[in-house]
Amino acid sequence: MSEKKPSVWEGFKAFLMRGNVVDLAVAVVIGAAFTNIVNSMVKGMINPLVGAIGTKNLDSYSSCLKDPCRVAADGTVTSGVQIMWGSVLGATLTFLITAAVVYFLMVLPMSKYLARAEARRKAKEGTHEVIEVTELEVLKEIRDALLAQQRQRGSGHDEP
Image 1 (cartoon, helix red, strand yellow):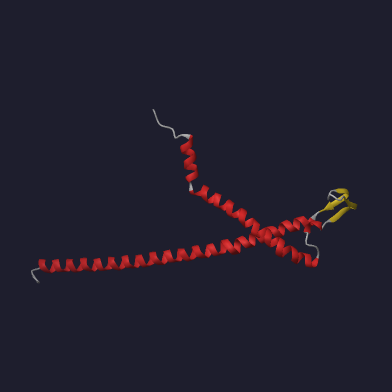
Image 2 (image 1 turned 120 degrees about the vertical axis):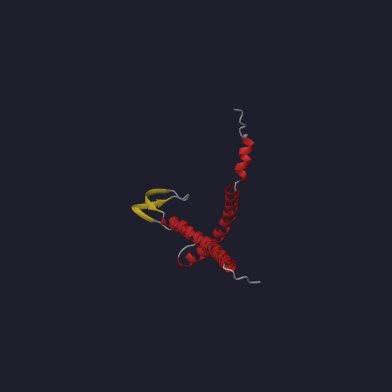
């Protein structure tokens, strides 16, 4: 009954050596770096395009539900009910741009690559199966020829 329990350190090492933990760590680091790219794209391209028809800062777009709406210098609403739909629009645009960049620059190329790799693997397996079937057929023919030869010998017809 003296089973040795794994130590906490051994358990921790086993946890760290799992592939999905390393993959997750890489994903977090890449995601953080990727966030800078998306933020730069929004700041450098999307906001100026929106600024051409309005203002570069979408946070300034709002609607007043209950008049009179008054906003203090620090941005807090002092009276009325103000809906800040510009900030929601900005966050939505950032999300859509992030999703599009991830899809078109990461997911789509990777899925095409994996599909090609799978097609190559299946083609290789298909070729391997054809070769095995051909070899099997040849072996059957040899067997049949040997059986026929044995039958001929057994019936008194000796052949060299």
